[in-house]
Structure formats: C-alpha cells, structure tokens
Length: 472
Length: 129
Image 1: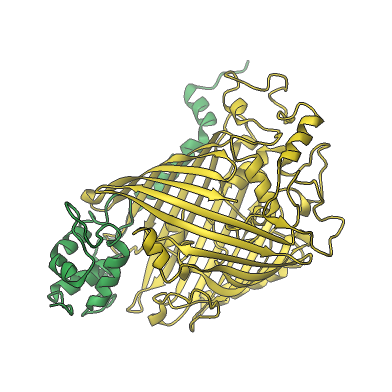
Image 2: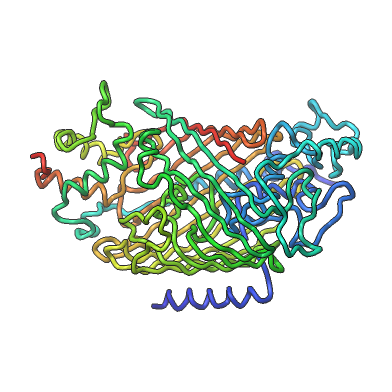
C-alpha cells in the first residue's frame, strides 16, 4: 500500500508538472545528435526556430511518431536517417566523423578550421539545393488542416513532406544466429506503420506486425500473432512544450527503449518489444520537449500467461498498472528515472514493482578528442512468484559507441541480470562487441559477437548475431 | 611553471568514458546472488506435480527452434511427446548445468528449471507414457 501511495504521489506531481513544464529520453542517436548543427538550426541561414519546433531535439518524439520512441518515424527521423546515419547520400552536414577521429589522415575538409562547426558538405548554396532536390517522399501525402505559423513548412526538410496527412513506414529485420550446432536464419521483424494526421494536433497510429519466430519463416507466417496490432492508439500532440496524450495499445514508457529487445533491462520486466505480452491498453500523458521530460501512464493488461488477442486491443484481464518516467535530456548528456507497478492476481502473473535509473553522455559535445557515446541503465524491483512470495530482481545495461564515420558505428555493450537475488543459479552477464554499418539510407547491417557468462562455467557460451535491418 | 600531467593522468583524462564503462561492467559483474536453489528458497514457487503441457510449453519456446522435427546428427528432435519424454533426463542435466540453450542465448529461468526437475523426479508423466 505504501508503494501504491508513493506512485500516486509521483503521478500526481507528474500531472501537475505538465501544466508548467515539458519533455523525454532515448538511446545513442539522441545523445550523439548534439554534434551536428542542423539538429536544431536550419539551412541555408542557420535559423533557430522555437525550441518545440526545431528539426530535432533530444527526445523520442522528435524522430518517432510515438513519444515513447521506436516504430514509425516522423519526417525529422526520416531526415536524420537519410542525412546523418548513412555513408552515402549524406546531406550537407556540419559534421564529419572522419575528420573528427582522424584529423591528420584523409581529411576531406581542408578549408574549414577543425575547431568550428561550419558545414562541410555543400561548398555553396547550389550544392545544398541540389541535395534538397534529390530527396523525395514516396510514402507521404497531403498537408493537415489547422497549421500554425510555427509548424514545419515546405522545404524545411528539403524534399521531404514536413507534416503529411498520411504516411506509411516499415521495419523489417532478417537475422542470422551463428551458434554452436547449426546456423539459424530467421525473420525477426516485419512491421508496417501507418499514421493518419488529418488535422493539426490529432494523430491515429497503427503498427501491424508479425511475431518473428526463430524456428523459421513458415512458423512466423503460421504464428497466431502474424499479423497483429503491435501499436494502435489515438493521440493529441504537438501542444506547447510537446505535451501529448495518447490512448490505445502501446508499450509503457520506462527506461531506455532499446533496439535490442533481448536486453535484460527490457526482458526481465515484461518490456520486451518483440512480444505481444508487452503491449498494454492504457492512457499515457507526457511533455517531451527539450530539456526536461516527464511521462505517466495508467494501463490494463492481459495475464502474463495468456497472449492478448492479436486484433482486439480491449482484450485485457483484471490487473492494472501504472508507470512514470522523467528526467532531463540535454545536448551532450541525459539522465532519467522510471518507476512501474503492476497489480494483478497471482494466476495472472502477480504484482511487480520496478524502479530504474538511466543516462547517457556524448563527451564529444564537450571535448572533440573523445568521440564516444556512453549510455546505461540499472533497474531493480520485485515480482511475485507463484507462491505469492516476492523475488527480488536486478538488471543492468551499458553501451559504449564510437561513430567512426558516417554510417559506421562500433560498440561495446554489456548487460547483466539477476532474476532472483535469493537463488544461486540464475545470474548471467552478456558481453557484446560489434557495430552497425549503414551504407545507404534504410539499409543497416548490425553484427555482434556475443559472449554469455553464467554461474556454471560449463554453461558459458558465445555466438555471432547478424541482422539486416530495412526501414523507411 | 606548468607541470605536464603524468601519463596515467593523461590517459584517464583522454579515455575516461572507456574507463567508466569498464568500471561499471566490473561493479555489476561483481554483484553476487544468493547461494541457494529456488527449491530451498521457495518450495511453492512452482507446482508440486507439473504437467506435461507445462513442460512442453517450456521446450517449445526455448528448445524447439533448433531441436525441430526431423533434426538429425548431433541435434536430437524435441518436437513431440515421445521425444521429450525419452530425453527428459538429458534435458534436465543440460538445463541444470546451463549448457542448454547454448551460445549467448538466454538460459532457462529458475522456475522453469525447477518445474522440469520436479516433472522428471515424478517419472515424467505424459499422455504418451
């Protein structure tokens, strides 16, 4: 009861804060975004729009339609994905990672002083406009009614539609797991996103996807959750300071929403983005501009042991849950905290209480000689066992990224979990070394060598995990 | 006169994010858990008499994507009742010493291990027995 009271107080403060303040959190792209001028400013004159309407700030909703992050991208996210992430088709950017890391070797920009942030791509406006004209938006149509002078304007994102009535998007991942025994090829993700945005401040988002089965393509197609509504919610957003409210099926905001759904900071706390079980039916309100952010949700969910109906988002059981997520996300660093509680009968999975802290830092923003990004999270909490007694869980995650050049990112990652502190044989640590290669916009190859260390030395193991991620 | 920093100080200043990462990993790796099995901690954590259906669900979700029907060679199929019952002792031994699932795949939870252990100790009751 004390916890419930505490959560209610925090949620109350959160709601009160919404009236006076703003904002939210993300992984390494966000932490790295402070390195590029046109994260906020606009070519050709480097204007600075109002904070809430910059091309990109440090929050999830800047690049994703869902303010909690992940899934369908906004025009800003697509622009960032085309101009900054890949090796080819980069825009005229005020950054050059090669110059940054190897200023004495193969430097392309020999005219711009190294300690300035001037653009190095276009040598003149003609080149900038030529790049603008090369960008097209094949999957977006129309402009919503009710635009204000502050909303994005045509040309803001070169050839991309800045604020379409309807947009389609997609994510597909094909995975290879080279483990002891035999290699496994399997479909990891097939998502199609659609966002309807008929009038300013109103959006309907649907994400229909498959549940990828490691046993193969035919099992994925035959699965009861292929396809299913991974997300379906109505949202009013883009209010001052990026205040929003959404209602429907979603994953509640908690901690860092990572690409790697197997990470134990997600999986141990029923936040694994690959599973239908992680989806809840609820309401979430938040304010997610730069730099403070806060989000609070109340939700109902299906029993932990029964998968929710693929299409009926109202298929929930007796339990309920609430979550709050808040912090500060600045240009070169961020810090945040989350809390979540689930209350449900034992035969539906029992009660859980989870608390997390997380943060990131991009030292390059402060010191150019340290071109790294560090992010991490630590979660702890309790979960009722079938007997009714509580198991104490802990999980942690840390990742170090080095964006060596546009399109090339190297990483070291570590995650660890102790699902039950009282039990000896369940703890494990996983180490990863690898990186991402994005040669062309929308095509990313992610490869990692992974090593798992468990409590019995004979059980330690390693594998090679490679995924081809196609996105638009 | 300005004194040049020592090489160690210089390294710390230059590579402090990496050092921080390593320190974080070391601290977390050093965290230790309890020294008892789940059965000793909480005998009622799972059913006293687990059913075959409960065991099959665990095998289906954690093993069958490698141990498919028709698997040959080093990989024994675990796709039906006879195969699971026939290899129940091996299954228990492999999950208890954490050698299965292999590689960096997540190992079974303590609840799942205890459930399979009790099922095997009860004689692996199943519809195909």
